[in-house]
Structure formats: C-alpha cells, structure tokens
Image 1 (cartoon, rainbow, N blue to C red):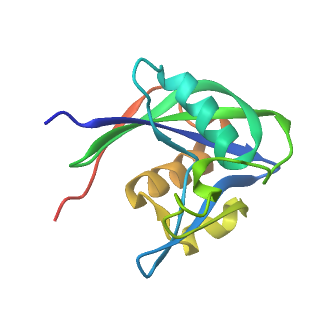
Image 2 (tube, rainbow, N blue to C red):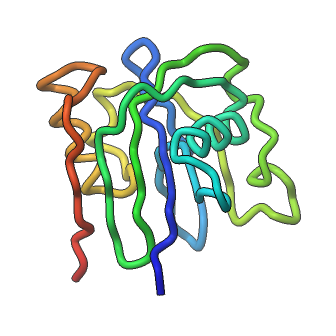
Length: 151
C-alpha cells in the first residue's frame, strides 16, 4: 500500500502561527494547515488550495522545509507567506455539517504558546520551534526528513 501524499503550510503572521484548533474523538489538538493531495495536484498547489479552503486566505509557498513520514502518509511542509484574504473565512468541507468530523476553529497562535499546546504532529512541532528559535520565520534552508515516533 502506498502512503498518501499530503502538503501543509507553516504560515507566520506577526509572530503568530496559523493553525487549526481541533476537537475530535475526545481529543483536543492543533494542526498545521493542509491536507491530502488530489490526483495530479502538486505539493505547492495543494498547500494553496487547502489553506484557502480551511482559512480563507491566499498564501504563497516559499520553500519546503520538512518531510514528515508516518505509517499512513508522507507530509510535505512549506513555509508560506500570507498574501491576501480574510482570516477565518474558509468554506472547506471541514465547515459543512455533514462532512464535519469534530470541531474546527481557525486560530492564530502566539509562537511562545506553542510549546504548551498539543500541536500535531509533535515531532514537527518540536523541530519547528527549534528552527524558529535559531533561524526566525524563514526557518531552515534545507529539507529535513522527520520520521514519526512509532511505538
């Protein structure tokens, strides 16, 4: 079975990270914007589409910084720049009652608060915080592969 390709954005605006607050299956957590790539869709196009659907904003992916691999998928993380749009105006399937699996609330999280929050996946959240402390919002200049801690 091949792993599902996914693409996610790391969008920082005024030292705040764009993230989705989630409540699902009695879990509370945050995720980076993004989702599964559609057939024939590039990673960059997926990032743009997903961020617009989820948050109502247009972003420009600048560079890939992480590839995260777990048992189900390979996720490509891009630093992306906010271009336009009204934050929180997303109309994606997450917000349609019949497709909604749990609660979705678009948030802007102060970077200093992230270490205290359940940002998923935790391996990427930890690497992101280390990168941000060292390199600022541009993060790293290479692509780091991160494997899930499968226990």
